[in-house]
Image (cartoon, one colour):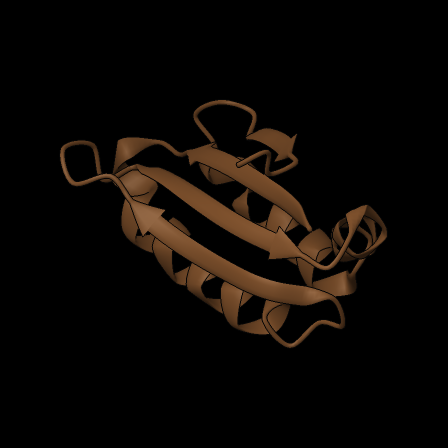
Length: 95
């Protein structure tokens, strides 16, 4: 299994718009071959900060996800909303 955590920080005034974009991205991503789980969280205290927790069959599936048209479209649409570059980290479960 391959795990990816992405922290997305947008401008505070863009939180609602980003939330809608990310909800659409999650729905599309869950349909992908190799997607085991794809969840989206929004920080309660700072609602302009989002976190995805993704579980992929393997690293190849996660890499393929990043090349899909819907990921490219989401990044292009969200780019003006970003307060910082997304932080994307990959993990392997150890226990």
